[in-house]
Each structure stands twice: as C-alpha cells, then as structure tokens.
Length: 296
Image 1: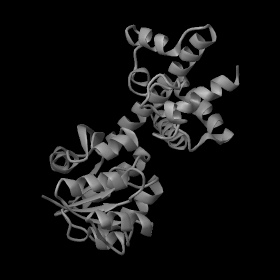
Image 2 (image 1 turned 90 degrees about the vertical axis):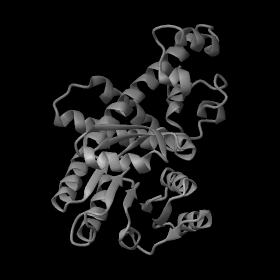
Image 3 (image 1 turned 45 degrees about the horizontal axis):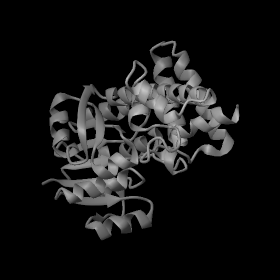
Image 4 (image 1 turned 90 degrees about the horizontal axis):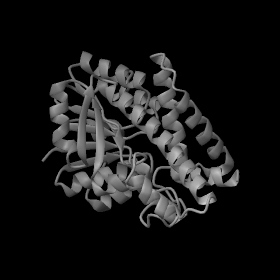
C-alpha cells in the first residue's frame, strides 16, 4: 500500500480520496474547506495544515483542483510543491485544466527529476464514488506505470494518451464530443415527442439503430425514460452545466492552438453558455433539453 497526499476535496476529490482509504492506502489530505477535511478525517485520513505539509515525504501527490491557475500556484514558483519535493514522489494532477499549464508543470517537474502526469478524469461524481472513473494520462511511460498502481483504486479505465498535456487534450476532445451528442440527442428526442412519439420508444429505436450513442444508452436526457439518469431526478447533477461550459472553453483553446475549424464545438459552447446564463449552471448538463422545450 502507498503513502498518498490528496489535495482538493471537492465533489470529485472527496470520493476519490475515500476510495484510496478503502483500498488500504495511507492518505493525508489538504483542502481549504475545514468541513471537507473533517469528513475525510472521520473516514480515516490524516489532515495536513498545508499542501506542502501533506505532500512532503509521500510516494504520491494527487491533486484535484478547479482550474489551471490553482494547479500552477500549487506546484510552480518558489513556494510551489516542486521546490520542496524530489524524485521519490510521483505527482498525479487529476484536475481538468488547459493543456499549456499541464505541459508547463510537467516540464518543470521533469527538470527536477520528478515524475508528473496530468490525469484528468471522465465519469462524474457517480463514477468517482463508485471507483469507476476513466483516467486520461499525459506523461512518460515510466511515470505512467507508477500512476497505474494507484489510479486503479479510483477507476477502471486508465489510458496513456501521450506526453505531458496529452491527458488534457484527450479530455477536451472527449467532452466536446459529449456536449455535441447530448445536444443532438435532445434535439432528436424533442422532435419525436412533438410529433407524438413516446420518448422511451424512440430511444429504444435509436439505440438499435445508427443513432446509438452514450447519451441515449447511459444518460438519457428525457425525464422518466431512464430512472437512474439525472433527467429523472429534476436534473440534479451529475455533471453540472457550469463544468461543461468550462470544459468546452478549454476544448476551444485546444482547437485554436492547432487551427482546427470546430464549428460544432463552438455552437455547443454557445448553446451551453446561453443555458448557463439562464440560471441553469448548477443543473445537470443533460438539462439542455429544457432549453429546446422552452423554444417550442
């Protein structure tokens, strides 16, 4: 079992750290929220007074932070963790951030002989709690092998996407596609419903046809079609609209940097941005169906 520091105990980080405890790892946590730290302490974790205190001497440092600026502040600069750690520690940043910051932190870590992987996740809060997340990892092969030893206790699909930053690029591609096919699924279901089709029957037809996709199969956006989906629980997240807008913004940055004309991704960002501005930021992203229904 490993000695792990976990920094960032939000909706995703808390369940992930809990699964490490359940797997028998020794976990030291740090978060600015005292309540989050107390909850983890009750589950068996030790609580540190700072990120540095949590990280020093650990085999692994895992972070799950809101944005690139927080990751950069945590690891870089005279007071960053990279100035205090050495090659005995492997860093796994599971935050969803811009690829440029991930590359910058990865390069700074490599210069000090410290293994670093950007390891963003897919699956949402439910998968974090169940330990079934997908990890998209960017870094060298040696660090990836070390990463797998610990990531397997928080997820079931662990991919080596390429060098530092590649995990963030993979996450951006995935979530852009997710937004596009969720919107398309909502449009198809609403079009059918307005023509008298039962959304459950139409969903079954499309699941057996060429329109089959993850949104239909796992996360149906139409209420009462799939009892376990957020749509059947008043669109309680799940994966919030606020987070989808953030991730689409990151995907647009990636597209601009490599000169890809992604008209569908841009439109998805526009539609989700409008939905967010209408007061739906805290709802599940499948609630984009309601935007279509309001236009009817």
